[in-house]
Length: 141
Image (tube, rainbow, N blue to C red; front, side):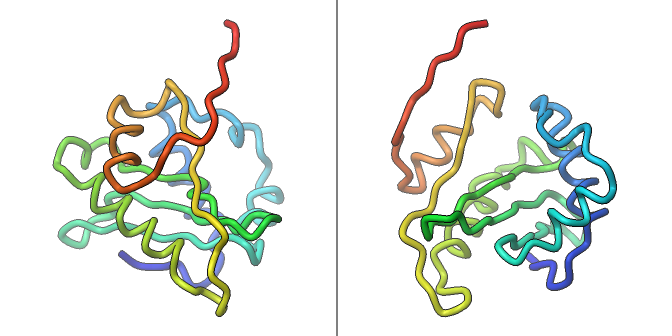
């Protein structure tokens, strides 16, 4: 696991598309390069890359929210690394990094947003690592 110490908007954008394509991530698809640059340079964002045998396998982004929590904002593996049991290790790393006292301040909570379009094992993976369901929203359509 390697933290991207310098903002690299191309890295964030490319991983967002490569990991998120199969899960229909759409919120950032229309973004311009300028929006990506601003996003990646935000001081509240930390980006980590996962490697397997020196090959990029996935990533996660941690974002400090306005209430002192840390959101696991984006998290996932590249398609060719799925099904190898790496998701649990990646999530464990994300949770440990989120709870670390980065910047000398412990977070109030660590949270993640998931939905029915995510990997079928996503919720079980979160729960296996101690996360609990906080809120459920149902939408029509």
